[in-house]
Image (tube, rainbow, N blue to C red; front, side, top):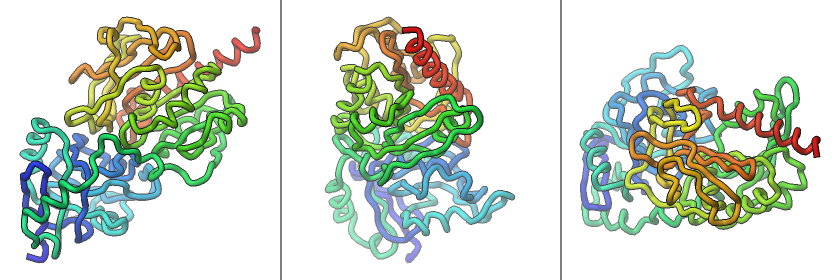
Length: 383
């Protein structure tokens, strides 16, 4: 049974299947992603660091992998769970197979289990710690494996920004006419985000997660951006303090995903852990400004709570930054999906407008960033 693998959940539930990717063991928070395509973008998204990802789509790997579709320089998931791995690769863009990619980055996975039953269990019980064990590790007793799982770190209270951020600052040049400079705090940024900004004439400078406000301000940015990323926003007090200083200078701010949660905290609101989170590329979100429903990509296990703003009412920022509105809301569970400030030039969304391989309904948010930069420059010139 050398090919046997077991998935052990912290509540004692066990699934037995076959080893997929690297043979060995891994621990992490078990979550499910509902996208039917774009598995390579999921695997290389730094926001999935520390998580074992279950693909709800049953057939995975048929298009292989290629360098152009990578969202970062490596595969970040802690483990990978699929039902039916493709036996062959059939795509003209493929450069290697998915199992080869998993082995290259030492990702332990499991295949051949009932991912539908597992997903239904997680929807009821919530995301939880788990472990995948294959090879010699799979032969250990269930009690021993369960002890390893329950001894693993929990996602709540965990800071992972230092794990995924850039080691040194770097700059990406703008394309076409120059429209402004954006200073980015890299909390786990995806390449697509930078590409969208550069394509709109924005020069981008990316800074490590622990960069202070003084350093950002010395670069005279026309806007500041906080990226997506993994971990609990309550464990990011340093970034919240930096953001409050930026907001105090009334520099345009845009945040995505983790950046949305940190804007919420900077404004004085609480964040909380969702039962099983939102992950996938088919999540419906209402834009309250336009009344349009966008199909969006999500990857978050935490959210912002805005008391009194559930139905789109304007509320006061508890931290003194003026009026705030919940600009976007999930149509699945009414979760806050965006924040809009009225007295400072700041906005954010919980989902991914840079989504690759799609959907592209929310790309306009990068245009909104450009408009905010232009409006702020015009206001300065008129004063």
